[in-house]
Amino acid sequence: MNRLGGVVYLLDYSKESLRLVRSSAESTNVKFVLADGRSSPFKDNAFDIVFHQGLLEHFPSPFDLLRENLRILKRGGLLVVDVPQTYHIYTILKHVLITLGLWFGGWERQFTITSLAKLLIQFGLQPIHFYGNWSQPGIFYKVVREGLKRFKINLPMYPRYFGRITARFHGLQERLRKKKLFLYTVLSIGIIARKH
Image 1: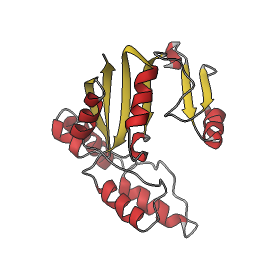
Image 2: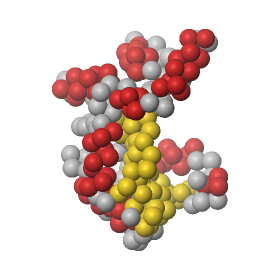
Image 3: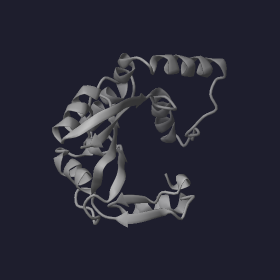
């Protein structure tokens, strides 16, 4: 957005998170705000787009966050919500690690594309686009990478892929992206919804 001339506000309740993002920000059009997303310091109807990725799933009740999203979103504005998808190996691994007290992300829920759409409709939003993505690199690579760290072996976060195998995998992904079933195979799903 800021490359197109828009002003982007990045909100987080963690000073450390804001510091990390600020150090890598490419634009001066990014405004950093230290606040809780459930009670932000913005005026009503302030934004054309509100976006969050990997946030909604950490709230036992998503209602306060979504109410605040609607308050600061202009009429006709877009809410973009990106969350973990229920039917994925990631979800199984996550719940095992949560049970063992080893999950890095604290408590976390997941959604299907249908349950997320129903939640947004309940708030008077109209879903206009559905999307999803597989994990890149893949979830198994990430598990191996994290496991090897314990032995002081550091693999790159984004490895060079295996040529033709990866090209075929990405080709399959692009073909499947056009089918609704795709949204039940991906790691994360998202919805773009319009405020009435």
